[in-house]
Length: 228
Image 1 (tube, helix red, strand yellow):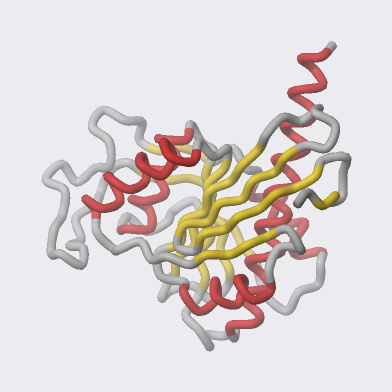
Image 2: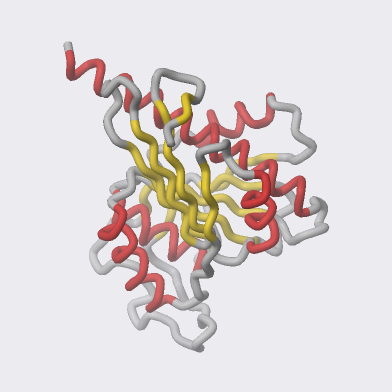
């Protein structure tokens, strides 16, 4: 059931948390079909709040967990991309060191020495053999941060270029490599340090909406250029 949202385009959205899947379908055919897959590692409470808040009347939320396991990530991320062919992936995970909601700008290929939940670590200590050292997201995280900050939410949002060289970073790089940069990662602090579930859920909703808006603008410009 298409619903107009801030533009000529109509949106269909189905979200899976720990896999989140958004689909946008245009009302006038200008922008082309558009979908987003978001994957969440361990931010169950805050994404549960996002599930309750929703992203508009056309959004359905379905929650699944991605295990903290290198081999599962390497198998599951490509499988989800092949299954859904999304145009953007958004990952959300908890950082015990974070005191603000943190937008990660890039993922890193090497330096993975910590054991996962199966007490496994890649022998190569990297995500992708012969892959680039790091991959940047196509999403302008500085712009997202600035936009969300101006909304006046009672949550601080910041930028990072180091997702931690553990499963969050590993997942992010794997997704960025698979998607040619069409991925994003949001780190949230532990619950109550200092934000509650409602605050984190609202922040996640605002961040995802701004990411989608920026991507919509970018896709619109590209398609309009092709038409001319």
